[in-house]
Image (cartoon, rainbow, N blue to C red; front, side, top):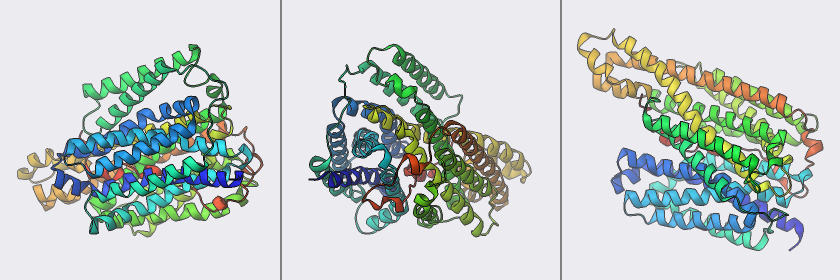
Length: 534
């Protein structure tokens, strides 16, 4: 097998893995009501079907990268894909909620391992001057999965039972393992060193605590002891981890990687971008489905106004790369997307859909510029032998940013909504004030029509108005955060050359026609279905 064929097949393995992960999350979200009914899942159990997967994914992504660097990236990648595929079988044949949740956690472990190494495989297969196209295609597959995940899930469930959403992973996983065994070249760090078991343990525990705290904050107040202890404990453990990495003889994260300015800035921009994006999608989904009364399918189809601009930008990307430096691609992309979010914050129930469609388009163009350039910038200066841990840390920023966005923006918006609702509830007829005051959490979660059904039609307008106060603030803050990420991109990545000069176009692969979409529309369907309890 010649080198060019191996490159293309390696890229195919990385892309199918990425697509399988995104597709799995979206399809599972569509199937949650069926699972709840047939397995008699409680609301908490239903949440853990998604959160168990998300926790394992966030906690172990850096570990997967470190394992690949030390023991062999091909070997660990195939192990992750195989574990994910076998866990999918376990999920499909589950006969109880506990069994399903257990296999979802195992699925998350496999997903963390394989996800952490996809960028690394591409970086090892292609020289630095030919990675732009492959990285663009790798991320573009996420967009295809985002666009088709909800629709495919609906089609499967219209014919087959809920287990079909897991069976669909099996052929994809088998094909990916076969391609990887045949074509992916084994690689590892050039100079063998001791494996940093303590560092791996500290990073996993720290990320687990931090992510659990952010996830749990959606169901408890920030004053909850569990939330406070987990977030504070996670930060403390990660601080110990980074202190130890500076003094360890064989650290999990090589010091040269931490000293790489482009990598650090790209990770920071990526984390803030996902923080803003997760809050944006969460509240926009609540607005369209719960306030405007759209179906999940119609809401998913509206995302096409976000998806399509990615592909348009992708077709122009090679041409733009000749004169658009990396810093400008990342910075201007963030600013453009922030502009779209600021516009979306002004949406009301009377706004024609043309306005949010235009805002989606602007956000899509912005992220179409920012994400591939930021991904390429992160991997461009990763030291030799560290592509696994570099890829893992970069992907971990996505997971932590998503959890932080839903927790922080959700908390701020819910506080504003509750304060406004309690003020407005005081103007309701006296018989309705007391029951209305007890439904603040439903108002914060966008359940205005449920509130009106429980209290009376007089409560509908105040409930919608109170929700829109929180919605406006959350989406405005998301835009501000993304604009700040743009400033960081302008400043932190300006030392890099233009995309065209630092990453020459890829030979023999038409990946440049595509550009990425976010895998992190993730957990949004579940998150949007349950109101934040404050």
